[in-house]
Length: 591
Ligand code: ATP
Ligand code: MG
Image 1 (tube, rainbow, N blue to C red):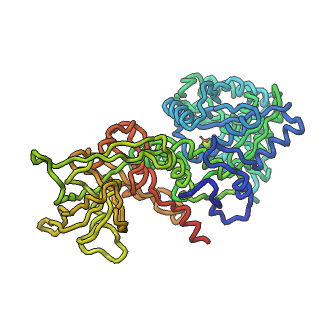
Image 2 (spheres, rainbow, N blue to C red):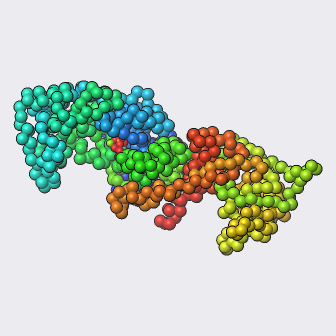
Image 3 (tube, rainbow, N blue to C red):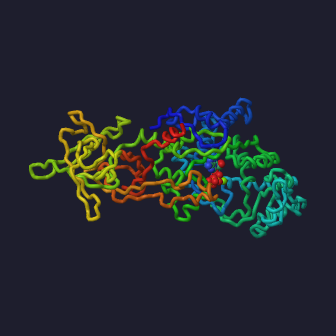
């Protein structure tokens, strides 16, 4: 079992960047309340504070687009933005980056709010880029009058071709030098809805030969008659990401605008826009950090949306999904996600972390908190032939007190019934066992956990030779699970009393993406989806106490792993994670 002190080196990156490793050693807690280590972003903020930049203020923002639900990658940005603000006595705003009417929905806004609250970052005063549509529009008019923006009558295809490429000169639009008054008139008429979708755009007038393509007269506004989830039909022109983002940051008073590395070539444009405008306050600064990537995992909303749309998974909260709602349903504790994000830290170089490392955080947390129960997934009857009957000829029932969680005495004990007819797992019995199989086999003695030693004396089969019942004798002297003569057994098995067990359905999961790096072979991560990654066991028998499991609660099925009770469907359990610390094994193998 992993402990917080384990030396978990963190990445499979093939780069030599050491920022991650530095963050790793600086983090001392994996069970605390999130990120507390230092890293290049925190150093930068500290320097700004020391130098009095931004007047000693720290303000960040987390800016999701409400076109899907949050995933584990977002969790990294969330913990960074919120924890950093907290650490430096600042604030973090949640801003919905809602500038694309076609793909955005109120249900995503609500889902993102709920997922954030679950993760530990509840927000009751979110803001929206669409709140600023008026100010953005006014600033656009200002840039036009300053000769820094113009209306282009060409279609988007032509504009794209004229942009050129690296070492490939850009071509200036024939409308680039049209008088500001003419652009202003056209822009106002664009807004008034006089022109069809896509017929004109507003572009910034920067430099068509700039080595950074983003600065080759980028588009600021497009005409789109989409119905917006908040502004409804008030607008038919919508700002682009680049035009909306930095200006929204400035309006809100953001000081440190943190985003992922792929935006680093947008930074000069971010700065350019801000430099042209009569800003009310300080000019915010964009800083980029590496995206979170995990093996066997896809962190692209677009790809995840496709899995949902194509019915490959049951929905955004399918327990195999790397979404916050999927992980929540799977039984991942929010604290484990926060701890993991804090542990990996932030760096400037992209790398891919092993999913097993993430799972070790889940396991560590659940080991501490989960109640232990017994569950038989593939039941095989075990009949104890020398089990006593009472005076009326009924089989005796015994009750054992079993610890709910040996890791936490305060969790107490529960009563588990034992009788002459039991269920054991089919995997735990073999007629003709190979050398290394130490569980039950004819003539062999094993311990039934917390109860008695039993010895298999025979078995019955059906016409096809499948074992249907195992016969066994028990040793009354071994009550509680140990023999007074000190004799040992090689195996302890879980069991449930046939007369007391309740039925349950258990979902077992393999990796949703079979490949370590989904899409590495073909370019499309969805090619690596394992459509067989769920196995549903509908005939399980579990101990009676499990009928009282709260919706969403995670328990440990002894010897089998951690299982989350479905939040909606009673007696459906999802395997969260197995018991074996695969991360420790990986590290051993890597020496
Ligand atoms: P996706 O590619 O999944 O759609 P996105 O960047 O388009 O992601 P947004 O909703 O725009 O999704 O992202 C909100 C914030 O979360 C952004 O600041 C973005 O940089 C950050 N973010 C998104 N994915 C990751 C990731 N894998 N690791 C870290 N931060 C991320
Ligand atoms: Mg985005």
